[in-house]
Image (cartoon, chains in turn cyan, red):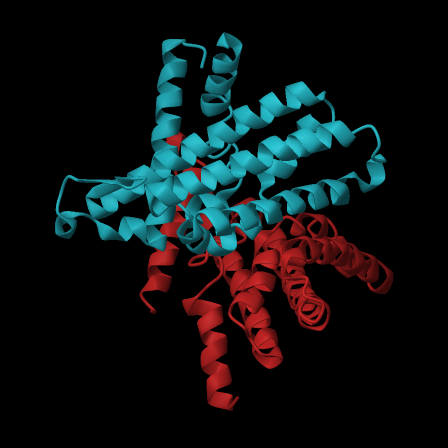
Length: 207
Length: 190
């Protein structure tokens, strides 16, 4: 358990999928206008990542290496289709708002990246844990971005069906929930992330 | 469609609904290749070729095979396989036909499979229920919009690389802020 926590901390801070490697920017910018959408996207990616790592690591010895990428993509695409069907049945509103970004999980670089660099080389148990940790790191990061944009853009935040109103909407910079705000808030958060990292390095902390 | 409608439709896909700055598609390659101007042009042109051709193929498959046989749930799987197969075919054809063109585009072609703009355009064509002509105009003008924005952005990044940017802002954060300002200009058109 302790090791799991250290691994999660590492993949959140040392190799954060968004602020360090800048992977999967399309869903990060496209679905983070509210906290609920962001967490829905994060959990969808987590689901696909765990199961794709599980399936890919269990077939890794039967797939010739020349055709591995098409095989991986087919597995991921089947999982995404399954997810689309589940979400359409369970939460139609989330299905509608995520819209095109749901089938686009297929081309999410994080999932194919983990499949290629980890699941195709390691056993099933390790791959599931890796999928869980990477997926959680992605989900947590985009939820934070979603919370930031929703809170500073509208002055309120909705966590599932609970709504907290702190400021009136008129005084908040509403552009943060629009497309310009997506780029700018991600840029500002990347700046803060790097600033903290550099400060920690100066203090000599290993982070 | 009259000429007027075609122009409005094309401009809307090209600028107002720009795929990178308002739809958030193809961002990985947008930030990845805009560092060098030659690679920006190369990527833009290969995306233009692949988006146009794969849109025609996916559109035809969707309405001629998936709809008549009631296989709509296979849409995502079929589309991504078509796109990735198509990229390979385009690569082989270019290699056979023109060696200089292959030298320019060669390294970018494999990257296009995971460029969300290609799959994204194929899905938008179906979601918005375009006719065949609308689909072709939409695909070409969207891909042109991508190419032009990546090309413009590579000039901006050239200037950024020459200026003294604070250490924490270097590379991606400053690029994101710049892209945000570009997106602001686009949203002024709506």
